[in-house]
Image 1 (cartoon, chains in turn red, purple):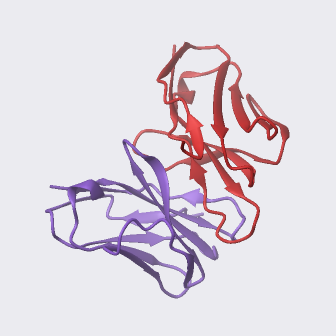
Image 2 (tube, rainbow over the protein chains, first blue to last red; image 1 turned 90 degrees about the horizontal axis):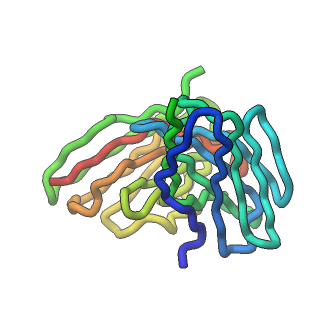
Length: 113
Length: 113
């Protein structure tokens, strides 16, 4: 079992739809949870950053972390064609050291106009 | 300001040759990470630098892979005797410190024929 599991999709939705992306993980040491967006042939860019459990909202994006279930989610409201990209969840532990990120494999999202 | 830059953007090499990949982090960022992104495996950690030291090399897949960082800035990832399975996108990220947000470069696309 990989440390982080993410459904690769692809996911195709009409413009304006609510998109739900999620990841599960097995390492209970993870404390920092991130969502990155990656456009084709570009490097990942950070969308959302959450520490421990809870919700965080930024514009059309909401990130949720449920540490008891080892489950994280990203919701995109009023999705736009410009949201079409691959979304990567990432997480790291809090024990000091390198804080290397452990990534899911990414979900490819297409928002159709 | 300038982001993380990587060179070359694309590299095609023959099996058995050595390659060097370069990363220029954001100025002042003390932490630097190398990751590899391949179709089957997703994005995987390779090595972490804090300053010029590499306290975490746990992701390097074999002794054919090495990396160095000089002057607390530029880093070079070297792959010796390349194999076809080394074909991937090699991503560099830098961070203000060990637990800060990681900012990614555009990557170097390596193809080993």
